[in-house]
Amino acid sequence: MLPDLPHGFSTSEFEGRVSRAQSLMRDQQLDGLLLSAMDNIRYFLGVNSTFWESYTRPWFVLMPARGEPIAIIPEIGRSFIEQSWVKQIRSWPSPRPEDEGTSLVVSAISDLPRQYGRVAAELGTELRLGMTVLQLHAIMEGLSSVEIVDGSSLLWRLRMVKSQAEVAKIKRAIDIAGAVYAEVPDFVRIGDSERRIHQQFRSRVAQHGADSIPMLVCRSETGGPNEITGGPRDRMIADGDLLFIDTGTTFDGYFCDYDRNYQVGHATDALLFAQEKVWEANEVGLKAVRPGIQVGQVYQAMAKFLSSDGEDLNSNGRMGHGLGLRLTEPPSVRLEDETILQPGMVLCVEPALEYEPGKIVLHEETVLITDDGAQILTSRAPKQLPKIF
Image (cartoon, rainbow, N blue to C red):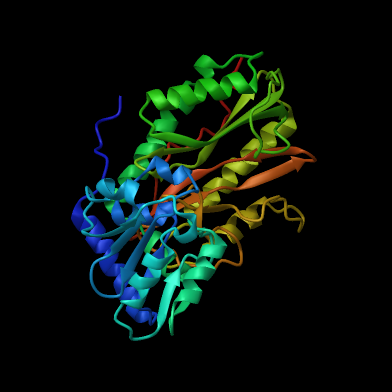
């Protein structure tokens, strides 16, 4: 049983995030930051609502370059937001399709102290709006002498570096999933279907304390799955299979993301060689991770190890990514990514190998960048595959 870890953060945690965001706004000559995506609202306000699963009512937060954030939310959520640390709240009786908060957002932006005439929004890399494109256009058309620009570089500069409190949430999600990964050889047998294994895994993760399991992949094929993005099937695992399980389990909104592989019965020499090769490539990647280097150098180290006679055997566009309030976040562990690794970043290191046509082996571990290197947060996968009989 894992020790108790409270949900939520201190007010000072959120005030620190706002302060850093406002410093970056001034550096980037912005008068404000308009947020509508649930993960960014959660990041700054510390609230989570199942109403975000509905597209009927958009929610907004306007962050001035100076001063307190303003929550602009449907009236149905007002009492909920009043329980947060944010004091400035404006609301409207939603649903109101003819004006779903648009006029309130335009008014709030127009009232900002104007120095640069620029307000950033979630327009760029790995961000999604929590409103329709038509509503964004209506907001832009309603503004006079204010330009809406991309805020992705600001947001990811903030969110890529985690506080100790955030890392604790990620580590808890990792440990919850890890406890169930360790149980797999005990509750999975030859003849079980992918669907049954998927259901059993999901149930056990919940029992161990997960808040949600947004992503869970369970795939099997002889010698290794031919794809790792689809849902579970009624296919029964059989002797000679490689069973692949990958989960994005959350605790207090923060994700883990790592996989584990299991040998079902007997394995071919080719599979065992590929397993060892990818496991060692992961080891190369883990040793390459350190502060001050470009994340592309981590990719380069693993790709070089996986190459054979000049042929690149990696079948993916990248071999890892950041992790936090989203299952995948910047940076990408790819050759072209020049992001400099900093202490506090959490990185999934994820080499993969299609060792034969349609047969994939993938290993994923998670590390925290520290002042002098990296700390592995996952319990390292064994070099020899755990067996299922």
